[in-house]
Amino acid sequence: MSFFGFGQSVDVDILLNDADSRRRAEHKTEDGKKDKYFLFYDGETVAGKVSLALKNPNKRLEHQGIKVEFIGQIELYYDRGNHHEFVSLVKDLARPGEVTQSQAFDFEFTHVEKPYESYTGQNVKLRYFLRATISRRLNDVVKEMDIVVHTLSTYPELNSSIKMEVGIEDCLHIEFEYNKSKYHLKDVIVGKIYFLLVRIKIKHMEIDIIKRETTGTGPNVYHENDTIAKYEIMDGAPVRGESIPIRLFLAGYELTPTMRDINKKFSVRYYLNLVLIDDEERRYFKQQEVVLWRKGDIVRKSMSHQAAIASQRFEGTTPLGEARTPGPLSDGGSRQ
Image 1 (cartoon, rainbow, N blue to C red):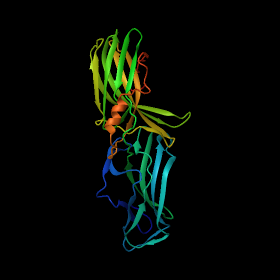
Image 2: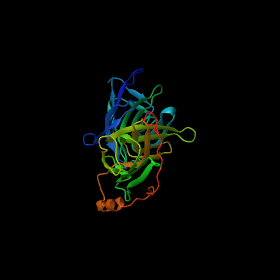
Image 3: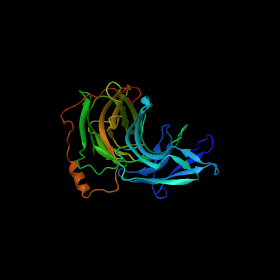
Image 4: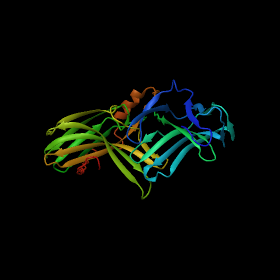
């Protein structure tokens, strides 16, 4: 970035010490495009150099101080004037004075707390960035560099399956089951649909993955539903006693971990939406929340044993004898 004024101008750049070896991750920008950024995790040190390159070697650069900041902030798009900072660290690099030649200043933020995952959504953005500032009397010279933070989890100790019976009295009665209630982002959803009673003509059946972003508090709450995936289970009329398997691979979809009440500003939740359409184009649905998490490199031992125990439990599910009435979906399909 250059500053053009009376006298000297300068290019400012931020360089990480481990730029050659540090992994990069794709992240969606506000305009929907994807760029690659340096990837960090909670507790990692952020270190590097702020480089100043003077444009005119025979002139000096006067300044009121040079600093570098590490910032984590949340921006709500309907309130763009206010940036809510949850991490703010500052290092002073130089006292007020003069810069007479190009030079670099070292900085290090040790074991930085990065509690939340980077996120760009419909109405909110959570970002981490480094910002170098040369304070000037007229205009400051500012350079920013974004990074991406991923939050890692370990395998949930309890991961019960989801099993429900739903239906419309004397017309339709189905049982559906998903093997788990918590899935990592590269997981596979395995399940089955079992038709106990079919007296209406079902012509189509699908499972949708719906992301629900909630921003704001109190009267200023905004909900955005986004259908991430549609998975066709069946095309044609089922018969009583028929069982249909489900196998949905999550790796191919653009998903984030579930985020709940992030800094009291926003939440991101995911739902599996079972949709049935009859021959008169009436739509019936049953929605079930699932938790998504990002898998770390270190996996605890004996997880397969724990998973086997969890799969045999049906905690928090609907009693088998209880049927619920699905309601029709709106024409859009993604808004419940």
